[in-house]
Image 1 (tube, rainbow, N blue to C red):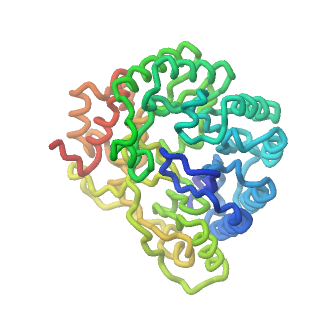
Image 2 (image 1 turned 60 degrees about the vertical axis):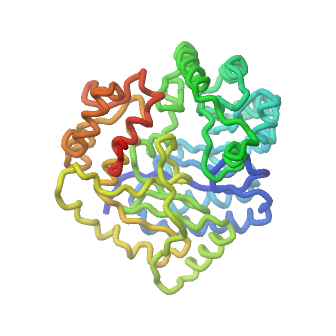
Length: 443
């Protein structure tokens, strides 16, 4: 039985409204489910607990949706169940996503008393017109108030999410947004170029000519200015879209980018654990019902696919909300049998977990490909010796062609035993990532 640490993700799918650009598993108008949902998440923690004995939680992240919408009483139910069922040290990074318009000083103090020590505010913009276009429910003053209350409550690490490159946004408007965020004194900034995600209202409007799409050239200019400004402000650019003051990197997200182990609790939450990738039912009501069935010791059965596995696109941040692509074997990978499965990781673990509606056993070659791609998102890049120790294969042998091609094109470089994107190629990262996909077709 492994004693390797794992991370814990808890999905809170409730929102006051669905943002037009959002493709996460979130729902508006289902507040009546909050209490049974919290109880179901607590039950699910108890179901997984026996299978994770001896393994310590290294990070915790409550994402959504809008976790800050969940009342403190329901939040307490989940947190207490988490601590009762998993070995969770008191000093782990314990993060929560929040909308600035859903919190006040008392609520943030309550969250802090439950153990949360890091909070991430979905700000997106400080310009009122941009907030209206994004259909956000907060205004700029609420951001400043929420930030101040979080600091007063004792949150030592505060992140702000901002989006740049909106249609019609000028360079000056973006610069004002970033300068305002820096003036607040945040420790960590997640700065995302607006992307059109398939199936979102914004993408449909752009496709139908009702809205303008982002100006990619202007986005590139904004990124270049941002990199210079953030560096001057003392932030490290440690991942394509993430910047932190020294020691304030998001440790939870680093688990994803290092392709580590995590358990996802909640509707639609994805997990990478027990030599499997698996996902819970996406619908909150269905999730609640299936957890209840699993808690009642139903007849054993295996999970059935609820739908296609959501692919990891080169722009995606890995997350239990965005699962990794099913990667076929890379044709140039080293031949050889996959490691023998651990008996503790057999399919029998999942037989009575009715809430798990998708499961896929890990494939060594797919894991290798994903590990390279995810690591290339980090400025530190891929540790070549660590890769070989983990998989028993060298990157130079398993990915000879894409390695040679990305080096020749000036997309990647080898520095001190690491493969990383070149500084000038960060905006071209997709071109490098795609080449490490097993089914990459240059045509």
